[in-house]
Length: 256
Ligand code: 3PY
Ligand code: MG
Image (tube, rainbow, N blue to C red; front, side, top):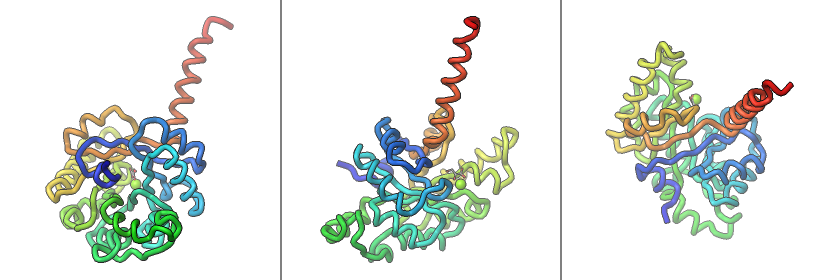
């Protein structure tokens, strides 16, 4: 059976969503939906560190890998979520090769990196440290986000960093950073996305992207992007409720 890193680097399309609701019930509902993975969003959602382990555990009930987007570049945050049993990390706002190297150092055990050994949930609370050490570097996904003008300018050096598995494009931040917001600037933004995707693919890295809806996944597959984070639990909840309410109002017309 493939581990999470192998699945995400195989080139097959993998579809996940962001977890922003900090409750195991929401995680179980999302995990049971058929998604390939979940990404707990510690960067932008109001999730406390202690809660992350419970969210990872809830996803594991359904055998769905849960990775975590950490709130910055601190090695301690990366270590905390990996020790809790995350299947990988998504490190936001990586703009230089040095920042990418630091993410590798925090994610990989020696000799590939400098991650510290701890008796966390990932290592069965200390009972299976040798077993975890023997498979962690091979099975944990390290995805870094390129989403700034500086990251775009440095993409070749960033993509060349050994130990990074996947370059994930954040179109929201990227559009703000390169001044390409709104439909009128879609051409400029898409060109920047293509530049990042093609440099990453040339360096042998897989490419991912955030999409708010499923409408254009096929278009980005053709650009060699295979890893998708599709909206978030809160976005799906809102969209589904809004559609349900609109349908109910439509149905009620003519009856009152
Ligand atoms: C962005 O669009 O900026 C993101 O980080 C999406 O995940
Ligand atoms: Mg972003």
